Image (cartoon, rainbow, N blue to C red; front, side, top):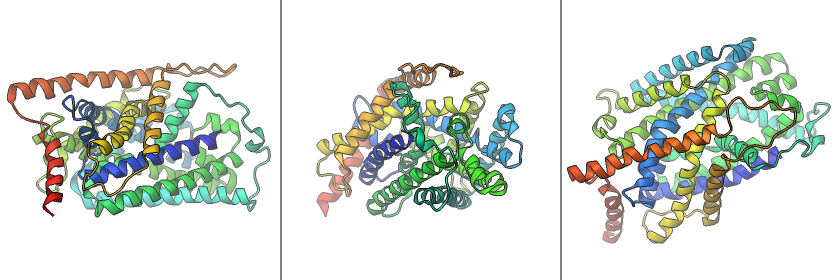
Length: 451
């Protein structure tokens, strides 16, 4: 069942990635889904885009950074032979995460060039690690490497739960692995030859990841007992330990995994600062002059980066000890399902409203866009369904409804700044904060007519 879910999540994520590629070619400026939603649903007063801007910049993105930075150091403890710290030193791990995040913040502020170089290094480490695990999975499939006795493949679908909440919870965590495609839109304004490179890079990346993820799961299920898969979080480290021995499994690979997770934190900080910068420059968030300010020497959005860093610290230390990562993952994804759905449906809306838009150089599959949007909406709703009870299984530490409820509550709270900003402030000051939406479309159409 796990492989089937990986396949389903990959196909639907491809639909989301291709929808993002079409919208990115239409509106090739930084901002991603904030900008896409503003053009897709300009009324009433960019409600959807405004709620999304506040949800992502002040909630989802900082929570995502905190979720990753909270777990990366446990792989280094595993490599050092001190795995007990993973269980017994929760706040120590968070403290290490806070220090590491601060160091990455400083680098993001002082040097774009070195930030990109470090990002490239982390990406190479991640690709190499995934390739090793995936190639091993391929060797296991063809019989070049002997499988562990008592393989999980003989179990079939035994123990599978088919209730709605379990399906939604599993898909939430799987989409977490595919979600990188959504980050490209936030910096699409810095991509060269967008009409060619954006669809090509997203298509190739999603296809390659699909193969690597499937092979990696084949490797896991062929080597690691199902009980360890259910109870453990350091799967890749356990896998290499059982297959290649202590040096590779308990030292080299855990360090590589820790570095790759740190790379995710780096990319989220890098993109998060530019996301906050865009939210300020486009008028969704007040004090745009401050958020949109760049350091005179370094040329980086220093204040936007500082705010993202401070909010990430709050989310890092706010959850109670225990399942902090699970809660943060659910919080992030629950807050995003509805925006993913509306973005995918936005492709259909813009096909009707702007049928001959000159910058639409790539057309995604409307079927995949609709299916991705429908599944995203369904998963957001299914999070509220109670999970099936399994005899003998320990109940979760946190209520199943906590994460989705907090996500919806926060989005509802975003209606307050939307009213204050887009209605009260605009009506009193006369400033047209959203004039840029129509102006962007008119400028493109006028440029096309003049050629």
